[in-house]
Image 1 (cartoon, rainbow, N blue to C red):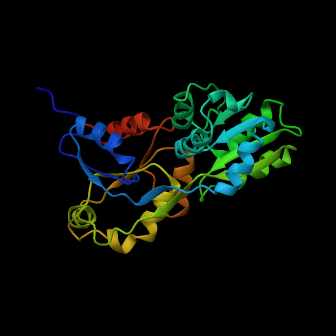
Image 2: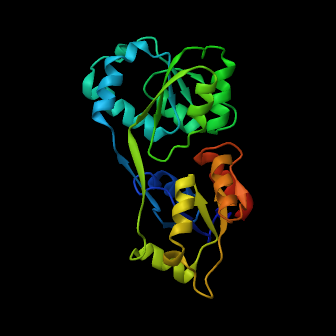
Length: 261
């Protein structure tokens, strides 16, 4: 019987605890031992007053722009708390930074009209600008607390009127007393997977809680896409492999290519 491609491999997953099961299941199905290191926690955190103003004027927006699936979920949780009909969105057009975000929008039976080939905020801004529809357009950018300003600044430079709407926040967790972190410190791993820049930053900030023992395996670090890889390099964390296209399937495929039997 042929061995599974990740048989005997230890893989650390750094996603938020509520987001890690799907990735963990895929890795276990390939034979890996999974160490869950939830370096971040994603929480619903909407400014209700701002949202009330936005929803009151929803018909006046031309585009709704999403930079993560967390933003999609948070936005629609708030939307359906106020409206019982999807038609309340009016003629709003939707844009997404990447396939995971786009899939979350399509899951609401809404068509994504703008999605860049490269999943970065700058590429999303350029794709929107290329539609030729931004001059004096009113755009709603749905974000978390850690989103960069690049997207908003580029849209404003293209003469769009941009409102930013935060619907979630990402916080670092403390893994100092976490049993999985103790196991990671003692035994290490063959690979550690990063699916966001915030997880990378938390990994760096919690270096003391994750410092490997002398004889522990030194893991290769894998990235879900260009933006996460950029953060890793700036933090001095070598990128051993990167998903061909941002998304969990491609990240797992890159891992198997790098470590697979």
